View 1 (cartoon, one colour):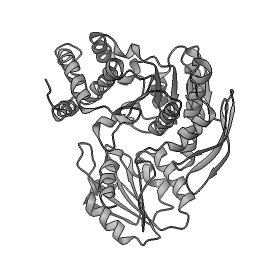
View 2 (tube, helix red, strand yellow):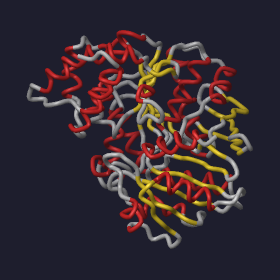
View 3 (cartoon, rainbow, N blue to C red):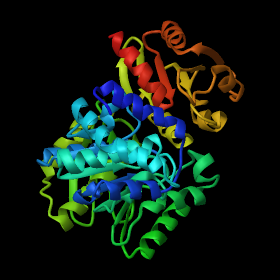
View 4 (tube, helix red, strand yellow):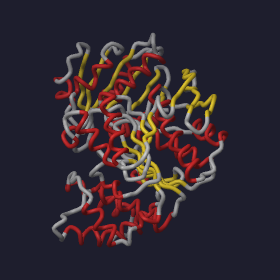
Length: 433
């Protein structure tokens, strides 16, 4: 058993060796053994390819401004492992993590000795969140982010009040499938009988599949640009402003500080979900609470400004859709800047397809790598890219320092790619302030 936080986290991370095992059987078995702590909780389930974390943080801030205790389950972490499981934005205390690990450890060992096999790291972290929220913290509501896909994701044992699916695009194709139809099928797996869906997906095939799945489950689908919509969308120096329209009310002059049209869409998904909870579950959410919550919301590693002279922006865009949104935001906010890019990816990514939206707007791309099990060597990423002005450097600190030194004070240094990479760079850049 565990006496310290370090021992508990070391055990959790040791489960990485068990890989990814899609399916709910182990989770259901372990939750049964623990007395189903998840059944004591009210949930909002958040899936999609991009924008899950931002949408979740908008909802958290709205709910907190409205006086509710809010649990959140997110991944990956940026600064500390404990931030994945948080109450009102405060990570699970280290002593509580040790206590919960001691509760679940015997169950995990027991499962390993059955035909179910050893639980994965993500399954165990999900289990820890259920025990913490259901037996220690007791929040009013838990916002739970899907880990991978949806249908067979370990979070999909919950029965939420409302579900959210942001956009659906190409990512984790080695697990979810090679075409949009297969990927959407997996994402749509979080849709439950009688539980409405809010979605910002705009692809016709995706929307049609989501609508069909909600019909099969006798529930409603709230779609961006149909059941809810945006107007008067404008970029300002400090962020974005817009008007939100739903079947229940219109909210004018909404402001957010997270930049980009994709963040406006994420905020609209959060707003629609909150409106549903207000109208059908009686949550007390006033317009001024919504505006304060959205304005206060921030999410580290998403178009985050780190340094000036030159400006250094970090953004965890790690798939084609994320890079495309990033490119649109840069084009709008840095139209006349020379842009130097540092990039690193994990897994078997299609580097060319991912980075293509950046080619028309950036001057150089420097590939690098970092210490992570699935990180790709810089030289290998370099080979997979057709952009002419490219370079590679295996040491990411050397790469970042060299690019910042090369840039003039009016230029932009963009560090992007894997969120695991962004987390390391962010810590380094903060030390330079």
